[in-house]
Image (cartoon, rainbow, N blue to C red; front, side, top):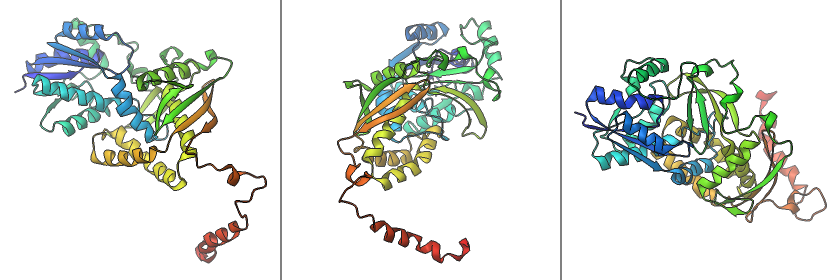
Amino acid sequence: MVRKIVLAYSGGLDTSVAITWLKETYNAEVVAFCADLGQGEDLKAVRQKALKTGASKAYVEDLREEFVRDFVFPMLRGNAVYEGTYLLGTSIARPLIAKRQIEIAVREGADAVAHGATGKGNDQIRFEMTCYALKPDIKIIAPWREWSFDSRESLIDYSRKHGIPVTATKKKPYSTDMNLFHISYEGGILEDPWKEPTSDMYTMTAPLEKAPDKPEYMEITFAEGNPVGINGKKLSPARLLQRLNEIAGRHGIGRVDIVENRYVGMKSRGVYETPGGTVLHIARKAVESLTLDREVKHILEGLMPKYAEMIYYGYWFSPERMALQTMIDSVQKKVTGTARLKLYKGNCMVTGRKAPGSLYDTRLATFEAEDVYNQKDAEGFIRLNALRLKVNKDLR
């Protein structure tokens, strides 16, 4: 029997309806939990809305620094990009929300936790994988897999019937999810992959037509794989990412419009804005190019798609992700240095990089006169590597 449920609550359409529905269906007390990950909303109003909608208690917790320090930065150290394009802004937020949700459930003595993710998406997996990893005996309630509603329109009708205030409308029902790392848009009017998003949809990045006509230069400093400062000024993880979002956003950097493969087996169209994250990926690779050994870098690049897949699929708290993270973090201790970038009309270009532990040797790389490299050595090197090609008759 379920007596108390901790609901991951955003104040949006799905979770607003869920409070009332959970109380009606399970005759249980509902405790709402909202994580402040930098979504820029009035979270005091979100808390009041949860209480007015029927929650017995509402937690609103500022997790911004933990989010960036312990989730975003480790992911960035692994250069994680899903299917070559998606920077995993929604994926990386879910394990932190679920982790804190389980901690609150334990504190509250709750029998179950609940979330507003649909039965078609990836978020249900990300939430539940984390919950089961951290508390194997927890009961999980996923209203979208139980209730009779079959669309966001039917949820809007239910909310109006029960006097639940929501911002979604039947005319503009696409779903958004925002945190310090990105904002996502999906569903509704975006479900036609041929249809261009409306220009007024974007919130973190300026349209290229309105971006500054002059480029802006900036420097980002890294210490052991983590960004620590902008233009010589040290900033906390959350403040650094917020500042980068502001700078890159006004230059229109970080928009992507993709069709991705969900873990459950279907394709989905998603539109994302990740301004600061896009800049950090480019800047980190610039510093890595100086500081990482060739073979180490190539091994990491080969493992990156699998690492990104683990995060996308919801395996943040899995032994394989943690084992790979240990390797990544060991290598990243060498990634200390500074990247200089030029931001202009949606582009982020590297214009310089330097590192105290740089492996770049000007004497070796120069095309001018030097006395440290014998060019004749290349002849034997090539002959040895060509030997197997010379004897392989199948190639001829």
